[in-house]
Image 1 (tube, rainbow, N blue to C red):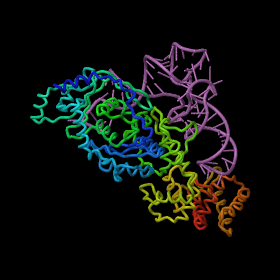
Image 2 (cartoon, rainbow, N blue to C red):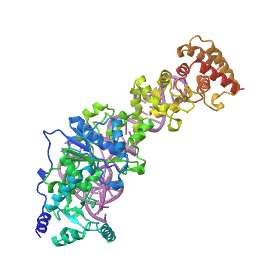
Image 3 (cartoon, protein in one colour):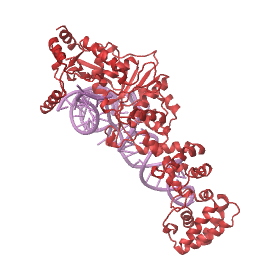
Image 4 (cartoon, rainbow, N blue to C red):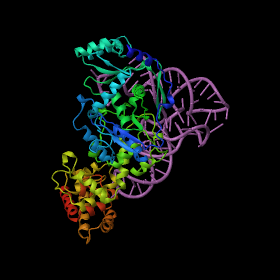
Length: 516
RNA sequence: GCCUCGUUCGUCUAGUGGCCCAGGACGCCGCCCUUUCAAGGCGGAGAUCACGAGUUCGACUCUCGUACGAGGUACCA
């Protein structure tokens, strides 16, 4: 009875408190969070959004919090949290509070905060802002179907909102299970003030009474994140734009609890080529995919920051520190951006070329030494690889690679003789006989050399070009094929120097033998 | 269907009333360098700023409408 009166007064409440809606944390250190739900393996879209929060926290000296939203216990996937945390580590995104490290506002798993949500759900019931709903999933389903059939917007029909105290008591006495729904005002508007999109106005009548506490006693996202963001003193809420439509409910819950929401930023999605939000359907890559392919985390980090954010009209390559310094929330855009694998690959190449040879070698070695089935060198090549030799090999390849994973197939012939088609030896305008004769001369010249150095060997070999009446490409192409078994390689003479006298002479002999 | 967000070269974007008959980057094409492949340098093609009205001396920039795209419409987040 009294409760009903409260509903009545509440449901006609209109929005006249816009100015006090958001808190302006002028003197407060920013606190931002990333709140993944462990129902799947986070792809780069999620990491991009997390990155924005991380960058702002680091930019301001604030805190970056990780909170696990594991309230959907039926769909929780083993290992999802570890996968995410490993990804953060790989990308160099440390966090101040969260799983493993704890913190002053823990616990950071929502399933461990159950009592808290129940307490606030009850508070909302007491204050008349929420109510127990006894409707079965079957009835809800049925109702939804009918509404859709009649071309009506599917919405809860408020049946349990106006139950009398007696009816409620009767239901409870029989032990019917219940959920808690938030009682949305029945008229008026709710304004969501978004820092990126401006004021977004919703008609309260269009908005459903959403379930905030499930029958298993765990909260849904709508209640959970509000309680947590408040208790954890989050100042800036960055989340995917898919949340815009439930934001009015959130605004009302904040208000009903007597709390002020943080500054809200609905950030643009990362899209697939079909312009739809990136998802498993797109085969959306995860940090692990990038790692396996040999992308450098610093390149991925840089690239990710540029989807939905820009610094100016020209700067694209940023070190981690530069990015932290340059980042600002105001320059986050509003429209979704398609993930472009080509551009990432280009950027990765830039980062590869910036590495010192030693560092490049250290980082590439593991990719070459992994089993052939995983993209490494053929298993017949003995591990571990010799560091100095590999370093000299990679020196020739550094400016040719876009990913570290490309190294093994590009340089395997430095470690073993490989099969190749004899026709590869015979250049345009040549035949087997002429090629053989040329190679014979090359062998003699090379054999007479005292030192094995590309600067020493190049002049006499080149002198053979006019002597044999060939074009440079014809002679050098044949030598290249003989020595590497490939049409494309690093520059011939430096390559031969690295390959070593013994291997080169042997391969030239073999080539000559094949040409009889 | 309903609600909401979005819309500048193929893609990422710059642009907050005149600096823009729109700038940068990836990709593409050409030239240079060069024994090949790259890298690098130089140059080019590529956007009637989704469309239509309006405001204004003047609009990519402001307003409205339309179209298209996307997100939401769960006891998922």
